[in-house]
Length: 396
Image (cartoon, rainbow, N blue to C red; front, side, top):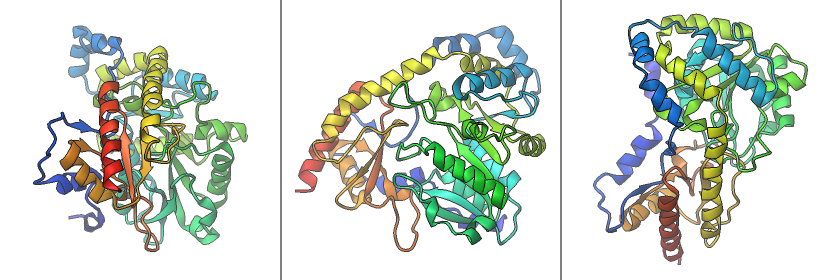
């Protein structure tokens, strides 16, 4: 067995299931899950129509797909990158379709990291645990960058940058919803060139932002603005899961530095993870449609507008600039709160410490909870009202 497997921690939702094991709720209200960031808005109608097209489906099921994907899907992605980030990506050199960002973020680490015992992988803290797993299973030491708002890159010394092989960033960030600003992204690009490491930017929440005219900047966009037109040392990850409410489609892409993309392509030919042709076909249509994305943002905006005044009765909150999460700070222990909330109100939230890592005796997720506004708006409003009523009595 891979000796590094022993370093992996249980996944946050395994820990949540263990926390709830044997518990019985006292509430007669229906269960509402605010824990899992699984979009529940309806996907675009044309997605179901395309997947029901017998000709397309039969062709996809009887064909081995290519690792590089069709020219059509890569062109659709390149067109979207131009529309969204004002960059010129070559469909043949800069882009690879992948089966969702989770698969790609993990396998990218396996392809990029050297396996050298002295190597570092820098990760946000709190974090999406896939980044950590990718580092640990290649024998790279995770270095956690405090990120309970803005990532504290100023705390990283030159020796750490020198040993860094891969930097994972997430903007808008899970769980905080904050953006990494352009000047910080620019600084990271300069560091990557100076110290010779790769930036893997998880931008899967880039299309969920509160202010319609204020989208977050992307890493490749900032690279272009800095004159790094070949996107050197920069790779981004995008998905249709959050943008288009299609988590089960398992469709996304990786784009950036052509030399890195080519080597990653070579890795993927052995990895055996080519996207089925019928999934490529419908994905191309989704990347070329923007109206459903605008409507999706509006639906989340309506939830935040309705829920923020309720949460404000107990919590010090602002509507986050991006994602569909609230990252709420509690006066006490997050595990106890989550457990007792489920027993009393039949509502599930995610304890923040499951997303954080202890650094110098401090876990930045401790005494926080993450709630995901993915359920129907009426369910979200009902659940948050019950959560707030519970919290008002819980901390008296």
